[in-house]
Amino acid sequence: MPIELNATHDPQRRSLVDSANIPGTDFPIQNLPFGVFDDGKGPRGGVALGEAIIDLAALIEAGALSGAALSAAQLAAKPSLLELFEAPISEVSALRAALSDLYSADNRSPQAATGALIPMASATMRMPARPSAFTDFCTSADHILRMAANGGRSPQPAWATLPVAYNGRASSVAVSGTPVIRPMGQVVPRGSNDMVFQPEPMLDFEVEFGAWLRGPGNALGDAITMQRADELLFGCCLVNDWSARAIQFYEMILGPHLGKSFLTTISPWIVTMEALAPFRVPGRGRAAEEPAVPAYLHDPFDREAGGLNIELTAKLDTGSGPQRIVRTNVAELFWTLAQMVAHQACGGAPLETGDLIATGTVSGAADEARACLVEITSMGADPLILLDGIQRTMLEDGDRLSLHGRAIAEGYVSIGFGECSGTIMPAKEFA
Image (tube, rainbow, N blue to C red; front, top):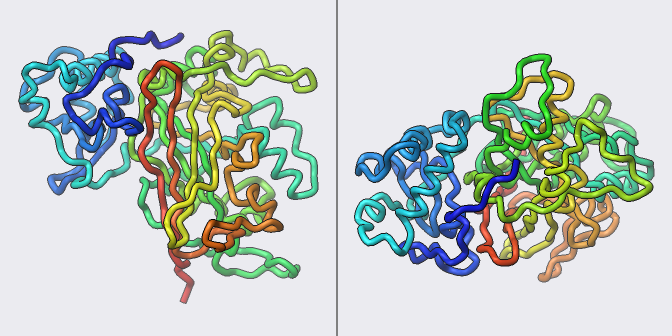
């Protein structure tokens, strides 16, 4: 069911925190995403507002919250947001509403509110929760078709009838800023027929979008409806599913394994589905020559508002400053988040509180929407040339890749997700 718009979405609302009113900030008062931070006093939950973090524990201690908002804040203030994901969505909404009022420019008694603010620059962001499981989908038609063309083959037909996915490695999901250590693995170098064990020579990024699931999920053997799937979406983040292409291409018999398991980077702030309500758009329709959406993945609301108008960008810094190399949009995906969730459970696999799903590479039709280096460079045949003349076919040690996202809708204040970044470090070779 659609989330009703309320006062927290009011584009006229301004914050008593000046940095939250700067045009283009990721964290205006209309956003209020949840995360876990550490300012030297131990990790705990907070909410981003401009260039500050609202310390929920301090607000609770000051007696600034009550009722359902207090109940949610007590869960959100912990070193993990897992219990917040289990809270009734009405309580999470009540907390957002209370924070929106407390930090509104109209607040005539702001002492308790301002006393709970911590400069974001003085804190280190932690993982918001340890994912119960991580599933990475492949839901961009443009990505699938380009990858198949680069390999000189036709794609498997399943991509057009179901959201293709693999079950990833939850233990290697890490927060933005975590170093990207080039993995070791088995590869067949170009021009050779022999396998060697060496540092990955074709390290790539993937611009992806993710969603954290709330509970309760489904029991073993039970499926879930599309409506229930949408209700299980707690909030969203940015995802970079780093890819060791040479390892991946050699091992692809059952699917990705070590080529994907070495690191997946996520942005630390979780933007709630309530905050994203103004930015929902119709799910992608189907052309006459494309298969119809299967009945179990078809839902009127999903067709009307299952997509999200979120622009994603990637910037590459090889040492001369960041340069944008990708601009794409979540709205171009072939499958919606709810369809991914419903399909994951259709065979009876239990979904759990704190599950993390990712969309796979969010590539679009335009050249600038090619959202990984394999696509950008046509598998290395057409190198990426940066403004300073430096060329890349794949990522090199020392390169820094950062993702950003902006939710956009006419008449509403755009909101962001913070940065999702990582710097490539040399492989740790075996002695």
